[in-house]
Length: 441
Image (cartoon, helix red, strand yellow):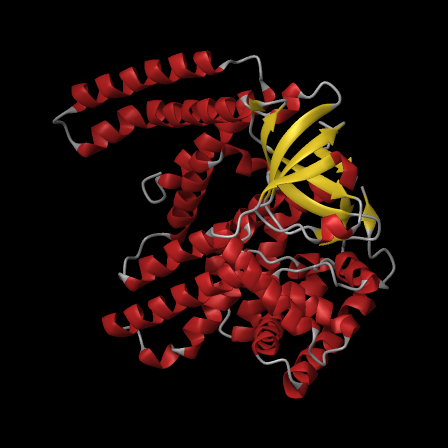
């Protein structure tokens, strides 16, 4: 607690959100009264402990403080649950939603996520997945468009399937930063799609550079999934961390002096947020960018702040802003992966060889995310360590050349990306073909 004071606070907030989610009968008023009572207790203890030594203050208020943070998480979770749209949809209804991503074409539909604004005119909150019939109207939809839907939403799966005659576009967003970012992303996507790279590998390059996964070949996607490295195809904390690391390595010659740290940190921050912008400012990428920005700023000022504290600070900020992030798979994977790396850092640094260190980073991240992947996808790839140790160290080069191909789609960059992805495909196909490569739980 003394070395990592923010970690138990973050865990207490998480515990409170989980309690509010699983015990819905605890109303917002109950959480509010309990929080107020706990705040009074903490205040009284602080007054009584002053001016005795800090050790006495620390020992007396630590448990009430943890309880206070837990109750705060419960209050935030209760407020989020109370306005959830799914509680107001007994049947066919009108929903006002705003798209939070550009719809992605699938085999039989266009898929998108949307933020629910109102149900039958009553303001609500929460998110849902939209499945739209593939037609000319669905093809024109973009991030920020507001729709009025009429249909039967599936409250358990938080989704709805509608045809073009059951929704209308009520407003379009063309001025916000996210909308501008999405337009830039689509421009770069069309630029990549017009390049010379073979379509079999272009889909993977688009996923790595822009977070666009609609063009990935189904066979390639299955191969990555069955070998245990499907996370490489979704822009996440791994990709943001690689961008920050590549920007830092490019300026390694500046040393660790104050001026070098400032210049290198500013370049890393610029690279991280530029990458976030070109990938469409997706919530998962923004969260990862915020997390790594805290690490970079700490390094700029030369503060030896424990990285776990910074990770906990990022979690606290995000959960207070949106408690429902706790149930987002992307958020869980990002934070568990970084936490696993940080906890395993003493073991990782014990290896002198840089290649071994990179391999151990991959092992730590994959092992830490294993509980999330098992409980969510109900499958286990026993050879995931082999694929990750072989591919993840190579992923920095794949990402770098994919970004280079995005900026300059010519024969040389296409050839470089294809060579790297051919090697990756050979490894993933081999691992996926091993006996018992996938165990379904």
